[in-house]
Image (cartoon, rainbow, N blue to C red; front, top):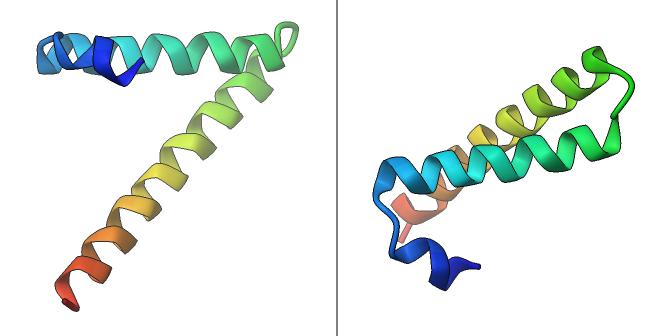
Length: 61
């Protein structure tokens, strides 16, 4: 999938990742919008943490 995304513009890549994430979240919580939104928010939060930690680790080298 990563190879397919390389041919897309930055905006299209972001849209594809957002759609993939939304489809996956909704597949896990098809009947509960609140839980689906909570999972989406948790994924976004965890992604932010991962990026911050990666930058800190990169600064140490």
